Image 1 (tube, rainbow, N blue to C red):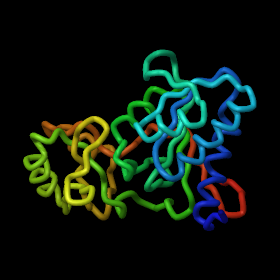
Image 2 (tube, rainbow, N blue to C red):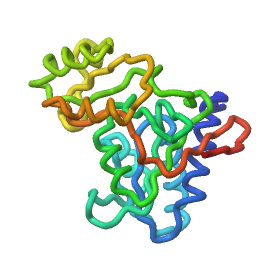
Image 3 (cartoon, rainbow, N blue to C red):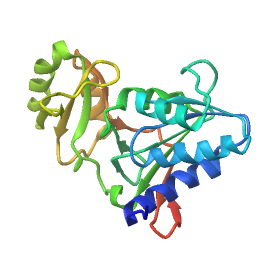
Length: 226
């Protein structure tokens, strides 16, 4: 099946991250989403060629993809993570990110923080001068969801509970996701701290000071980065 230009760019970014950062006997963190999908596919290819790799998956969906491709899985903390590779919903020039469009932000952040090197893979469409156009995902314990939503609305955001069909979306951790439209986030580190200070917040989709590299894939297969 012929890929769209956007999917070709996602594939270029995912393949480049694996080709540049995954060596033999590497322990890697593998992300979740439509761009990370291509990195996982590439890891499956190198494993099939005999390279020794162990992976920590950031979601049940990625675990299943790894299983289909024969990628050996370990648990977070079993051994040091050399590199983590994951997509992003927005990437700013200082390498701050918004993540969590796929609902796996808590595990994605846990793996990214644990890795010696965290590589974010995006297409040009995900580049922004300032974070905030994409609604910020916040993972919340269900018991506290209404309270937390009201508190975030007081910060100036429009908040909605993410749905899955007729029901609320439930993360792999059993929590709900609040999608918070701030429109502009001039100080992401400060907002992240304020949100995490709300009782019931498990994690936010703000990744500040975590990414070591941002690789940008283009439809022609070329890669830029910062």
